[in-house]
Length: 172
Image 1 (cartoon, rainbow, N blue to C red):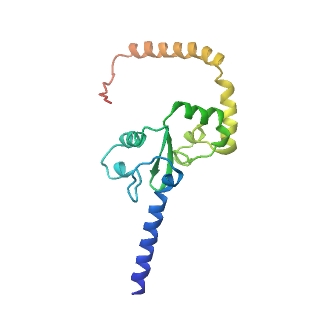
Image 2: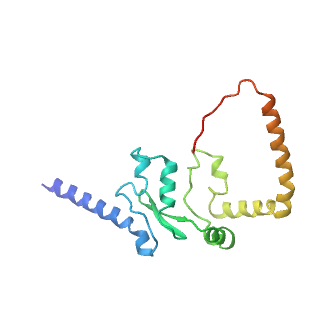
Image 3: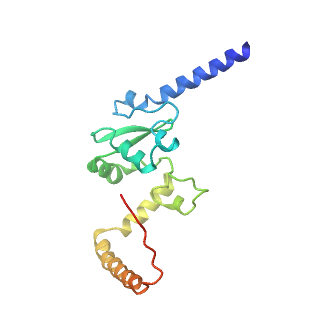
C-alpha cells in the first residue's frame, strides 16, 4: 500500500513539474506553441511523424510575432523571427547573450564545439573579437574576389572530371 502511494505521489509530482515547465512562456507573456506533455515541440521527430526540418518549420510558424516560445522537451527556447531584433541581439546587445545551450556536445564533435555558435562565456567573447576584425566591409570586399576565383576554379576542375559523376536526386 505504501509503495502504491509513493508511486502515485512521484507520478503526480512529475506531471505537475512538466505542466509547470510548459507554462514558462505564458508567464513571461510570450506567444508560445502548444507543447505535448513530455516531448514539448519535439513530438514529431521522436514519434517519427515528421522530419527535423518540418519540426523546425512548424516551430518557426507558431505565431506571426517578432519572437515566440517553444519547448525542446521541457526546456523553453526562444525563436527570433524579426531580422531587426536578431541584429539588435547579435550586434548591439551581444554582451547580454553570450551564454546558451550548445547545439552539439563538445565530446561528440570537438571541431563544431569551436564554432562561434557553440562557444559560451569568455571563449565566445574572445572568438567574436577575433572574427569581428576579420569581417570588416573592406576585408569582405577583398575576400569576395578570392572566394569567387576559388569557386570558378572548383567548377572548372569539376567539369574536367566528368567521368564517375554521380547524379543525386534532390527536392525541397
